[in-house]
Each structure stands twice: as structure tokens, then as C-alpha cells.
Image (cartoon, one colour):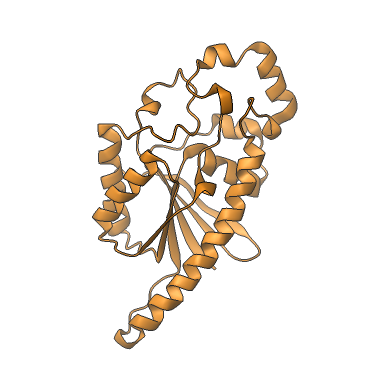
Length: 221
């Protein structure tokens, strides 16, 4: 069993244009504000004595940069892995297009009918993202526990007890889709719930379960 801290990336350039559909947009960088948010998130985790045994990061520019800035504040020099399962929900052919033009009355009716199984052409559904994130959490949990045992054996002689925890740097809808999957929340909850940039969600993960402890905690104070 391990604690996994899920950090949403800092504000990105795409977040500054809510009228457009974002999705994965892997090359989108952080804004200046987002870069500062990442640093503050790292300082916040450092104050809480969060010492991850492993860091897993979605392979986009905004998540990689968020991780780098946060980890610098945490003085972290351990293992970092990049995991494509942590990507944001793909919006397929609609990425970068106008929300108003995309979400027509007909498409909104489809969403009402299909719920978490709805997906735009070439994209993913919330249900699909929730399932891949759930699988990823169990995989990362195993990696954290293995890495932590290695760390513990090296530090045992010094009497240092390292908690079993990992840090996951990922995306808002990916986090919400995972929570909806494990809690049974519907599409409306995913649509209406907002997680602040650089917010922190905590899970307790074991071989048989994923428990939500904290959702979208502010790291900017």
C-alpha cells in the first residue's frame, strides 16, 4: 500500500483560451503564472515533508516542466519515469477547435445519452481514461513500493523511515476521470468539478483498492 499524490500541472497557455478545446495538446507550454505555480507546489510539498520514492509524469511539455520546477523546490534527485497512460483525455479531431462550434445541440444530446462513454471523433471517453488511469495507479503503486524497499534498505543503518509514497504529475480531466471511475461519479460531476492548476489530490492505493483521500487541495498558500 502506498500514498500517491497526483499533481495537476500549472497553468498552461491552452488554459488561457477556454473557448478552444484543449485535450492532449502535448506541446503546449506553461504560462509564466503556471511556472510560478509549479514552484509553489514544490515548496508546499516540501513543507509537508512529502518525500516521494518515485515520480511518474505525463510526457507533455506542461507536465514535464511542472515536475522539473516542483522537484527542484523539493530537492528531489530520485527516479523519474514518463508514462503515456497519464496523458490528458484525447479530444481527437476536435483539439484546438471552437467549443461553441463543436458542442452543438445534437452533440450535447449525445453526451446526455452516453454519459461517460461519450467521445468526440478520434478521441477518448471519460470511462476509457478512468480505466487507463486506474491501471496506471496500480502499476505506479507497485513501482513505488519496490523503489521504497530499495531506499529503506540503504537508509536502515541510519534509522531513517521513508514513507511509501509517489508523486504523479498529470492533468485535470485525467484525475477527474480516475476519481469518477473509482467513486462511481457520473459525466455531469466530471464536467462541473474544477481542480485548480497545480492542485494536489491524494490516493491510498493497494493491490485491491484505490481510496480517494483528498481532492484538489490548494498548494499556492
